[in-house]
Amino acid sequence: MSLPRSSYYYKDQEKRPDETSLVERIEELVEEFNRYGYRRITAQLHREEIRVNHKKVLRIMRERELLCKPKHQWVKTTDSNHPYRIYPNLLPAFPATAPNQVWIADLTYIRVFLGFVYLAVILDLFSRKAIGYGLSRHIDTRLSLKALHMALQSRNPPPGVIHHSKRGITGCCRHLCAYLELPWVPDQYGAERESV
Image 1 (tube, rainbow, N blue to C red):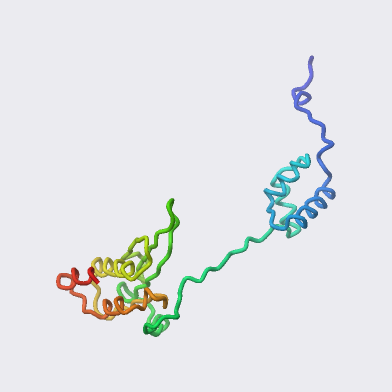
Image 2: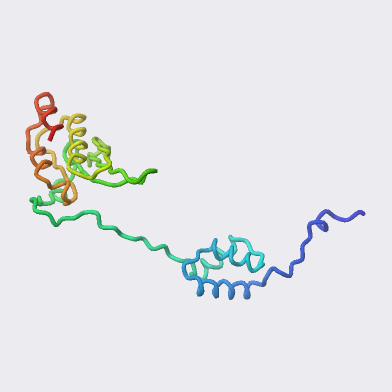
């Protein structure tokens, strides 16, 4: 038939809205569904048989500041209301200039297939290297002690290392404080410390 190939793929352009009507419809949708992002708005436009690319919707929403901002829920995980002694923060006075001067301890949780596991980590502040860790299904003193024991075994630190942690109950309990105050002799105290 001697027709160009584009004639076969030609589709009627009447469903493509002009820019102003598209912007008005996007603004209406954002007002109606204020938690919708550009992907959902694009899907809604497609349901209304308005042919538009998601990149164009994103550009329009960004230019007019219509993108929804995700809400980040802050969860407080450290409970400082406990009967144990809270030690002063020594970090501002002692910046780390060499390894084994300041150790930072923290706890976090990891979502796994069957629930959560808890991870205790000790970092050397100078090198930012993880020197001890513990993994458990329960958040308790044993988890912190496991991480500390691994750090002591791997580094064999000199006396005077600052152990900095949040002021939660697992970082201030008497077992952990007693463990930190003992002189570190790997051969003599290793087995006793693990049983605490």
